[in-house]
Image (cartoon, rainbow over all chains, first blue to last red; front, side, top):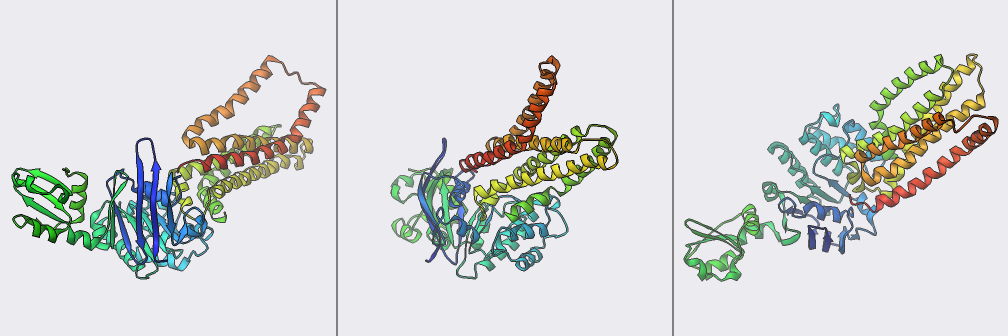
Length: 286
Length: 210
């Protein structure tokens, strides 16, 4: 069992939205970034993985177990952080420790305290007095303190300032040092993902556009530049997406070195995940 | 389950302090009046409402979706809330009982059995209120249920008031005995309805998309 998470043709229909045969695989020992614009289906996918919504078809394997048949056992072994804190205003860190001890078989008080210290979370205050960033850090500390094997984070770095974000990313990198563990991490802060993700899965309008290793993405994709007149010479199959401007066309292409061979007259620039995402979503297609 | 109950009790701590204050005030009030039934009913309802308050805290924190990402099933989540509700009602009944009985030991003339019956009736009323309310909260959420709460509480009282005004029910020996018999079985009826309500809530919650 080499995969921490396998999602297989997951489909869920709503009136005005459809999660359409979503599939991807997260190997152990790695971090996957799950990107897509707001409303693309990121949270719905995570809810479906957690069996919080009823799906129409497809299956999910978490740590080699079926997410419906072995739900309880799976949930003992995963840590989840949602967008925003889910702890009540009146609670303090030590209350959370007491509550979690009653819920998780493997809850580790000393580990929780260690994370509180590492993330500089104030223990004397109630959740109500926390900033949004503090709440997020508390939720992350709580998600890590029952020795989970898989972490699912939904927009968990959203409210954090750059320094806090770095602290959290370091904790995630630390967590993944154990090759048996994995992190699934949805975000639209691409910078975070570029920093720590091994794989990027991109969802757009309920469909998976690609699932690739981050390095392949950055090295293989490129932006090809040509004049407006030259544009028609380019094979439509080579165009992932394009944008026209006053000076000509910018085209997102997949296999950068092959394209450089095929179209020696055109300049091909490096690209990044944010650009790739923009071209897929906003760019025109031919 | 232990974690869920603990979570609710910790969250209700501050609220509980104000309840204790109110209870103290009303206890003083009960000492000076002959009839403690108002106080006992009031206290029972007050404690029952604490269960609903804990649900609004949960809703505010978006707790349910989080809890379901933990090793807690939907059924257990509902069961935890029903256990809390039952514990709170029992606590309300126990406190009411003490308040009702103290004047008797201080020398007031009163029928002890009648007092017990009054207290148990108010506890049953509180339980029946929750029996109706909890499934509604699971179905419609706390905001809409708040309006329904008022309807659930006020319509019966208004109906009773009108009924009493019209003089349709003339108190006499026969109706008294009938009412007392009915009141004696009321706690059992309330308990059965409460258990049935739990199963309804589980069914509602199972079909709900979080």
